[in-house]
Image (cartoon, rainbow, N blue to C red; front, side, top):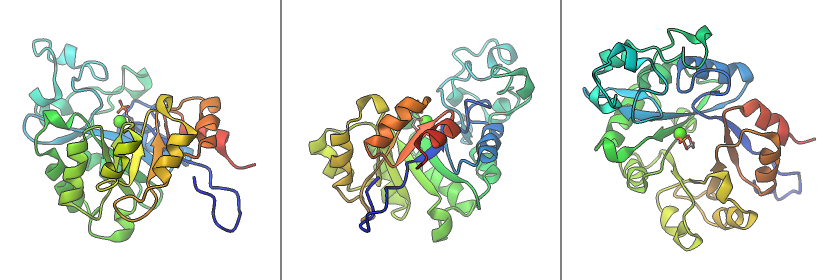
Length: 269
Ligand code: G3P
Ligand code: CA
């Protein structure tokens, strides 16, 4: 983070609960939202995809097998693609037992349920559009849902939201359809390409393995689409030593399955 002009120490980077606090509760579930809130971690990251009948659901993989009991419930539906199931079918799945039997019965949330579970006075959302190439037009669907849930029209609520994707075209589409919404690109564009990304993003969010202090400096030197210095939120950092290393490079946010570990590691003395 950039040092304030008056010489105070820079703010430590913001911890972000990756797929919710997914080190402590099953990823991308309402329990993972609650776990982040209980840790006092403000930012929650999730992954959004679309069902066969057009419902938005929160799920990381393009297939349902790893994080649900879909192979038992629907044995004949291999390869169990999210896009091949209806919302009602997905709602029958157990998305918690694979993680810990304590979470048996946890469901794959719809985006609507996920948004409603976030406590808007204490929680912010880093929403990832996952595999946008599989879901043409999903950006408009997501924006429609966010608008109907009240996330877009009031500035103080909008400020709690960033929409990111590995798909540059998807991020650009979000910017074009909702110019006031903050956006992030997941990846590490070449320094020469950064000005092009800055035309539609507020954040450049690379894996920590690709980061250097020089790269963070180059990103920060540019203004994002809303006129603030481009930010860097890096992922996925699950140990204190790496958290301190990337904090030392000046990143603005650190996305982690164990965001409390990150927060404690980078706290100012
Ligand atoms: O938020 C960044 C990170 O989530 C990107 O990777 O695969 O965990 O969605 P992935
Ligand atoms: Ca993600």
